[in-house]
Image 1: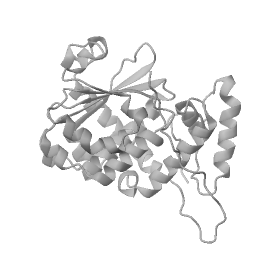
Image 2: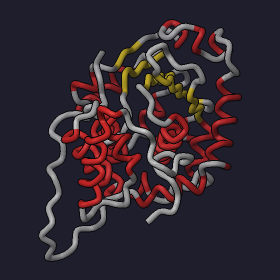
Image 3: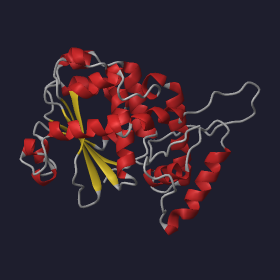
Image 4: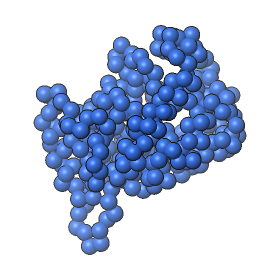
Length: 296
């Protein structure tokens, strides 16, 4: 049981739902409360997942089920979510994770990720996945219901030594989570400054990528300014906003001061262990990609 507000830290009361979708949010929330192994999801969770699943109730149920299962089965990523933990701090000090301040005309948030320390020994892949998920959960809380997200992964400074440190178990968890359970509308994933060994990277991850996600990927050897335009970017790329390092430091501080307790508290959102002699059954996991993944 949690005493804090989730998934939006500063919205303890249910958000106002568009009238045409209010009945479905109520229906989903009542279904959630009836699931014997579910955690104490809030009505805002029902709204968030329904929005991410394009208002399809059945898809939202599957996504919630997968979300609870992945959180329960992957404690190395979703338990002990202390932003001040040594592994998480090592990741945050070796990377830049930034939500850019200006949204697109469609209302999409731009997320930018890159290495700040290119030494492969500074990367623990499990802790990197854990940190990435924590950052994203906090950003969902900051944004509220967001129309969509565009992700920019900058490969500048990535070496084969980083690829050698990738662990298949956490990678598989991450790919399953992003595709089947992450409650956002993912619009596009740009891989900029693409490394010469990108084919080796894709050989590792492609077996885990469903066609819906594959359709969102775009690779370029150019920088982000060639993709989204400088008006949306930091000064590093000729844009009007603070440098990436400054924004990262500010957002890292927010995680450490405003979101530390909230992130640790969020560890409760996982499926409870199955009771012996229990007759309860859960719905089948999804057989297709999470509806939040959209191909425009």
